[in-house]
Amino acid sequence: MSWNWLLLVLVLCLATAAAPAARQTDEAAIRQIVADAIRRLNQGDLIAIREFWDENADYVGIGGEFIHGRPAMEAFFAQLLKAGFGTETGTIEQVRFLASDLAIVDGSWTVTAARGGDGKPLPPIRGRGCEIVQKKRGRWRFVATREMSPRNPG
Image 1 (cartoon, helix red, strand yellow):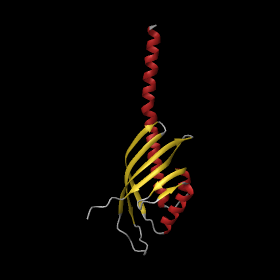
Image 2: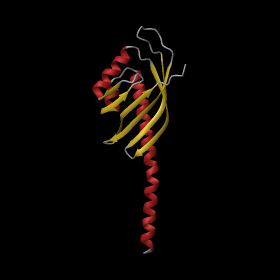
Image 3: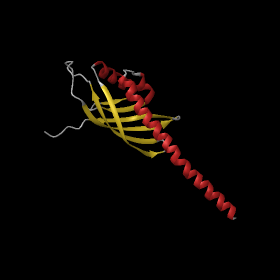
Image 4: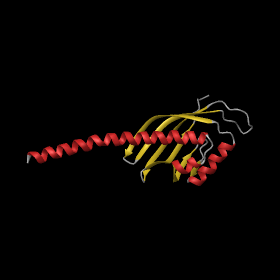
């Protein structure tokens, strides 16, 4: 009887030890898709939308526009890139898991070298973002993105 209890305790300990390792692997994968998506969009690569965003993903931009679905997101980002989107850098501040296949990513970003509608350079644009990512068929993808650019009260 005591061997059964010892075996049960050992199995529980091993299962508990494996969970943090899997979580670390998933967090690293999430951080990597954020970095890869930013890098590829900076290069003007709209294929990144297909690779990193779910087909039914939602996106809310800093102007408040609500975009649903990958085709609409591709059109939106194509317009941004054509208008002189600039170069984005981002910092992930937190990855919080809601479930083993669902996480929230909070961070901040800066866009430099952007141009206005008149073609003139804009000052750096800073903001915050919240991404909801979901693991489907072994891959993490963005399912919802919310961007904001806080303004200082005048």
